[in-house]
Image (cartoon, rainbow over all chains, first blue to last red; front, side, top):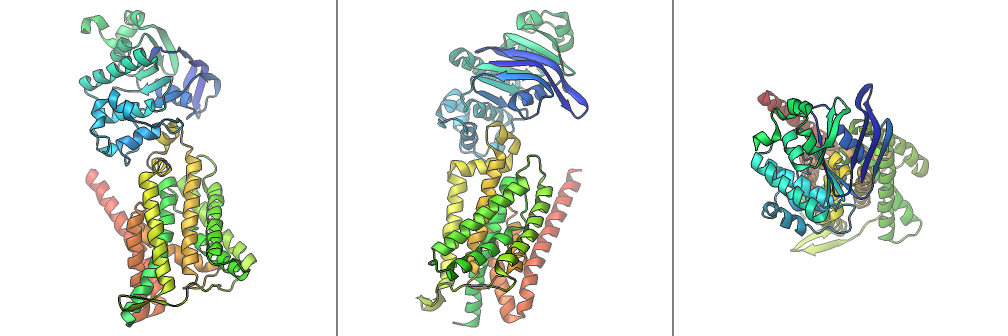
Length: 222
Length: 286
């Protein structure tokens, strides 16, 4: 579904991605973790075609949606308008199924996007991405600035969409705990290079991942 | 009709023209963040084209419509030059629009010469509530009301209108959802051209236009547009009418030569006030 092969991205002379390879199969949930400046957002921008690649190849089969970091809503439009614009290239612009999926948005559907709480804005951003009826969705820093309860709720909704609709997910997160507990497979990115990859259940036991990203084993926290 | 009322009616009609130019400026700015310095050119182009088409025997209505569509096409061409290359900054596009406006002078002199041209609008008077009003003035007001109503419906209730607003408020996110921001910018320029064109065909029967009439028209439209914060066409309508009436009163009761300075004075005052407000806000934030 997403096949990134040996991709290099440069910002001027700075190397942002150094021969990065990554795969997301149909219906798979994949995490991409790493610290600030590791190149996670750059990889998503390359997937969306927002930044050009210097070399390597990117292949995306099916419809792809990108929920960018910082939500990036249309602030002076209503929630409903934001959602409908997510379906700009789709034939069906009916938003009702998003409200059924995220009932909290239903009561604020007429409100301007910039008047919502952070959690509501993140829901709108994800809902807008879903409106394109994607086969795979990439979400950049879903948990950033949100209360744990809201993050858990969003994570549940994503899992539900993955199970029931076969939605592929590429979750880009600084919060390794969240990403590894939600996704079956993960990649670790550091200074533009993939330094670890594999099933999440193996990575959570890797000394490198535990010491660099978790602090303590995942099971201990639970 | 008393002198005061005569100035008032004239001012409202001319002010509607300013508001139409302002609304074109606002739409282009809202979608592309470009202040189009060639906005007056659209009005001049449409006014001169309508005069030529009427001279050639085209009937009223068809001539004005053709002239407006010509201005819309000029808007698309200007848009292609100003924003067609991806990554062009709004500041660079502003300079490009100035250059195209100057190029427009040469083209207009080549086609129409340097003498002012006009054409007869609706002649005669209509009696309303005991007052006799010129038909052409009423036509301008009616057209303006219809155009602003249509703009309101377009931006508030249509998908394309929402997509244009989205491009203005967050171009990056608009690209991510699949909106072609450059194409939407060209739609904005086409609308801006058409609105300038409508102003041109409405005002030319009142005031003959020549190649260099664009700057006074731009200054008046710009003053009305910044009065509306370059965002709200409806506020620009109120601003344009207020400006038109004020200029008509100044021309009537003081000197006609003062009226053109009024818009410039208003524009400078608003810009200075806005700059001072922004500076105060920055100081407060620090």
